[in-house]
Length: 304
Image (cartoon, rainbow, N blue to C red; front, top):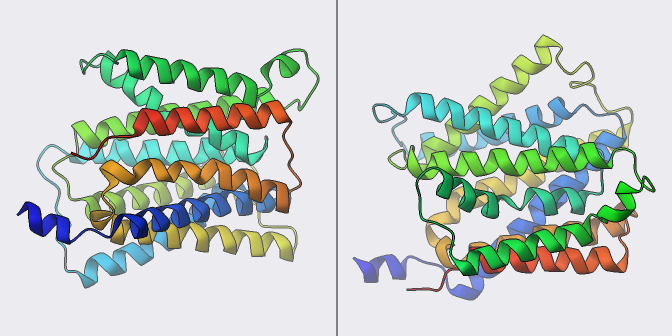
């Protein structure tokens, strides 16, 4: 069986290249989102379109594969909570992207592996090793540089900085909780079913939030053609990346190759500079590199 499983995996170079491409696609989705938000597009509308179109694509795949949609006993409430958490994570991260440079929002949002390790320990899991604690400290030091904390505490920069960073950190916390639930409460649920139902809950949550008026401009339409193009681009980029990940993940050896996905903030930095003229100082770039390296080292697992 082990030989058969190994034979079904993509070659390492192909898997790494595909994951890097997916990371760049997710990065492009956030850049497109910022362009759409700058054109007065509502955050709820962006998430609604993104989750709705992706749900339809995945539903078609699941039906074509004739996969059963039943959930194991005792998992329905956890699946609902997972969907609500992912909806909250999407809302917080997009709201952060609308306020601060996209690369910084993703750097903060991608600290979820550190938060997941702490959450697992707090809920009775293994205590973080010295190696893990060392990399956590490295990540925090990198964030201080990347976010240019001293300048912002002195009130010398973007007035929306604190709210944007707080929203991105909230997204990381919520996503860490979602991953814990996935690993510990929904391990018996098939991946395709879990992904499909999560997207459905996200879509329904955005509909309810929009109808309730909790975010008055949440469903605002783009003000110009550029906004519509950006909205369509974020839907396509996210949908294609999510669908490819959905289809290919069994063959990507994620336990070994998942750290490759951390090129997303780097790709976002380059795209933000090229398309949005969002520039970071030298020390911020150094801090960003430290954060990415720390996250990669924290999540890297040697192949057994």
